[in-house]
Image (cartoon, rainbow, N blue to C red; front, side, top):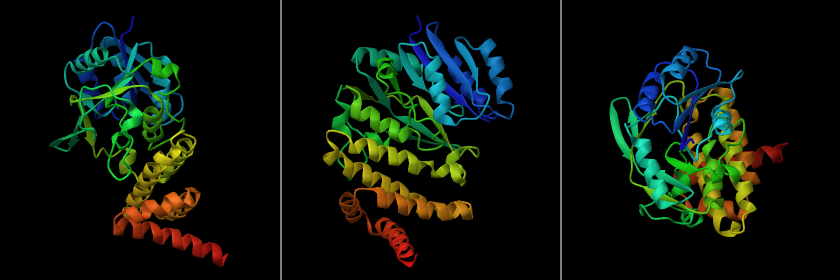
Length: 325
């Protein structure tokens, strides 16, 4: 009987994979399995994982013949997982020794569908704790109840799949898989769906995941067209939330968050390749046009001047271009 399956996608992380695998060894238990998904890496990562398959207790090595991205790699892991509980880790991050045993004991004691945890953010030598934006700890709650308010950071704004643990019943309910092919922001539709549709969750004050920021190969550091998948991801959030029974209450939060992310990317547009920057502007304008316009107006009115002005400029340019055409 496998109690816990840990899904770990790897893609061109030969520099960091040994640290990740050492931390998994420090979390190994006879009823744990570690599903190592090689997303068709082209560096030395496959050889590292092949050795780990032999040397790491509980390791299960799965290789993609074609690179599919993080969402698809996680889905492959879910499809191969046998555990009663599931967790995620990225191939360039690492864990504190014994962390998973602590996390498992906590979720079993609480009896909820999933738990969320704090984490340690690591940028070069700097370390800082990033906390789930919800204050009540070790208390089982309805995840729908913590989506709002719209104008504050809440649990749906803390989307990291690896910051938690999940019961298998969520897989059976179709809530744990990711949108196939999303290259970035894959965890945004995922976390919103979890909070809308799962029955129970809790926040724990554990911080045993070490999240490595600033990795050169990470998509968050690359200004190519794959970054624009955030638009497809948030379109999905809006579309699914609009069908929810509480759409009138939840859509302002979804639209405001979408606008904040668009504004963030527009505010850092210089890091994108020129043709991608042009596409970002046009796709952002089209995305705002697709949003419920009354909700969008309220969202822009509620934002600070700089962010709202940036969004309105792109929206006006798009409208002007249509009139000229």
